[in-house]
Image (spheres, rainbow, N blue to C red):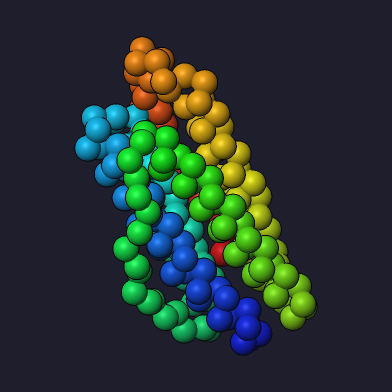
Length: 170
């Protein structure tokens, strides 16, 4: 049996991960409208990753005999105007998700729920990668994005990104 607080936070995380997917899909559409297929691809893959994260949390809850409550996913209310706006928002969002995972981890440790702690270990590592990847993209955009040829090359680099589903065993 999962601790009540841990179960509540895990359930909230399912919905937060779906929101992340929704947010990144909004960012992908922003770049699609501007003809930047590589940036579109990068955020579309982020959408797939976040959706799969939500599914992992959902499956973990189900495997532990906990009900999953799917809530309404709010529309992202972020003003995007400049090409770098989604990138900066992604950095902020990943830091926020890291704080959610850390809170979950803390709750699981406090409840001595070591199975959930072990489950969350993968997400702790994943969030480190997510924060680095988004910050690296901001850095590249700051270095190269203002020059059209360099922006074109960066966009082409981002087209090459492919999706790899997580290999976390529940």
